[in-house]
Image (tube, rainbow, N blue to C red; front, top):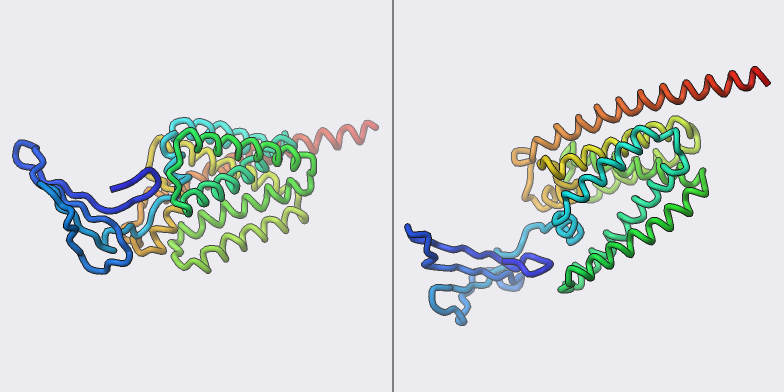
Length: 288
């Protein structure tokens, strides 16, 4: 049983040998009712009950539910953008910084907007969701454009976002369910990468773009192939107890190693380009 934005309970239908429904059992979610309670409004072949046991243990975010409807479109965008980042990380640094600024700010704005809708239990129409989605992308594009003008800040944001992505992957790879440890790992990875950006700028750019680009590329493929749920949703399932090592989707590790493999290929490609550029610069300096 669901409404437009959330799960409201369970519904079981019993059918006879002719596939005709002979009995419908509806159990509505009510956190205040600890035991199964009969609803006197039941009529005909439909029996109604209320119980806290019918409430969801976890629920996919409103943003995830919205994007899932258009995964075929989102997948293509992620594949194209991921390839661009992974291959051109140290070639078109201004565009790369702008793209990362756009993606990071858009994701934050979209997450906050859809979280607010879910918290208010708003019955939002589809066209309104599209308006919110478009508005977040426009604001994200503006922020990305502004960040692209500030190279040092942009590189730090790029490295920090790479650290966040790494943190998400590590926490799920090691099935970390504790909320404090989960956010500590993500925050720690982000801070380390953010700080490293000021020490070894050129190398951080190559590693971060190779990794983030590969992640987006593989994530885009997974939207068609399946078997690679979002890290946030997996964490919710793990922390709620609905998922443990035995039931954890092992296909996750296929995607994990695919990201590592693609990252190494992209990094080797960028390193070759970087060395060639350094040789050109050295030759020009000698001629001058």
